Image (cartoon, rainbow, N blue to C red; front, side):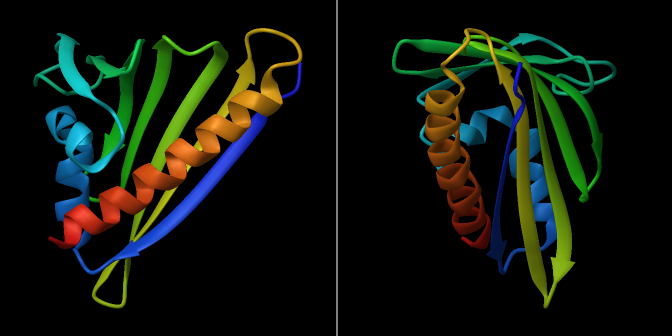
Length: 143
């Protein structure tokens, strides 16, 4: 089955540390993205939103569950989508690179459609969502 990759970037005047803190705190995501709610289903290793944490984001009738799979402070945040969207093997990576006194944010997701023939539709919807999320993150981080 075909694998889709979406990559969106935005720049912010905020430093990587400020952007990273927003990514690590799931309660901020509904503030800077189109998500409507957040809850922590399972705490991670050593800290509530550490590796292994399962975060639930609500958007309309969709209840998406994401697991934090890794991070490098002020540089990268990685997660897998567990359920909610009709996708297989969804992986998200947000890279933060210092640039001209601010940060270049690059958000990349890859996935396969759960049902044949739906990949184009999922790609379209996720392309819009990720684009809006990376821009909202950049804008909110800048204050």
